[in-house]
Amino acid sequence: MRKKIVAGNWKMNKNLAETGVLISELKTTLEQSSDAEIIVAPTFTNLYYAFEELKGSDIKVAAQNMHQAEHGAFTGEISASMLKSVGIEIVILGHSERRAYFGETDELLLEKVKTALKHDMTIIFCFGEELEDRKSEKHFSVVETQLKNALFGLDAASWKNIVLAYEPVWAIGTGETASPEQAQEMHAFIRSTIAKAFNDSIAEEVSILYGGSVKPANAKEIFAKPDVDGGLIGGAALDAESFAAIVNAI
Ligand code: PGA
Image 1 (tube, rainbow, N blue to C red):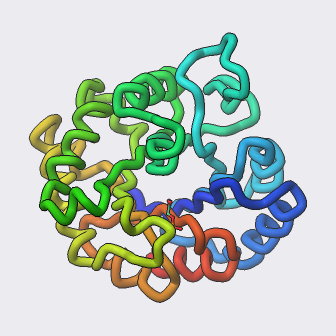
Image 2: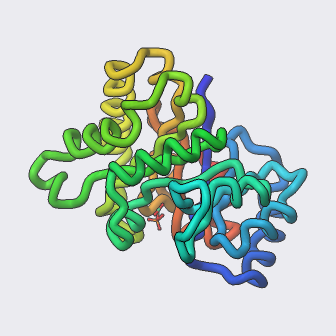
């Protein structure tokens, strides 16, 4: 059975002291073990600290990005082996903010995916259409192309390391969320696209998270949809109580 997952993407928020506070609040608020796998993604400088603090808890730690090269003259970048060396086994790739502000293309993301797989990391792969695409009813084809370019060339065995996060760009940080029906419709489309490109068992096993203005007030309805396996949470993950409420909505 596929996994339920709730992941908190902290983006460029929380310094070391604030990270410490949020982690200790999460440890007490999330003390009951949940049905969902719980993941938090602090910024690079706090990954090692977060990993050490959360050792032995039910909360896993992910990175928000990584570079595709193994090592070398790439000033300011972080490699897969650096992440692994501080205990990080999960990486978010392809977030729409990376695509929009840092020029990450499907081709580049394919390189990053390959490198992460080489290091046996789990990838939370983000994709989703922009508002214009939805208005012009191109959302299905945009999503299909994003998946095809970055993931459909992989071998079937790689899919055990892949988690998908459908995040319509128009719903990220805007307070605007896809309706549960819109999320379900797209998630079902994604699953059938994967079934066609690979096979039914890969399509059935892959967890597909929804992301974009998930809050305690709307999480239950969205997570109740059969093809929605959890969420990637931005703003609401920065507060322990609201993140816990979302985890409990699974
Ligand atoms: P949001 O962000 O929940 O603040 O909309 C989601 C994301 O960017 O992953």
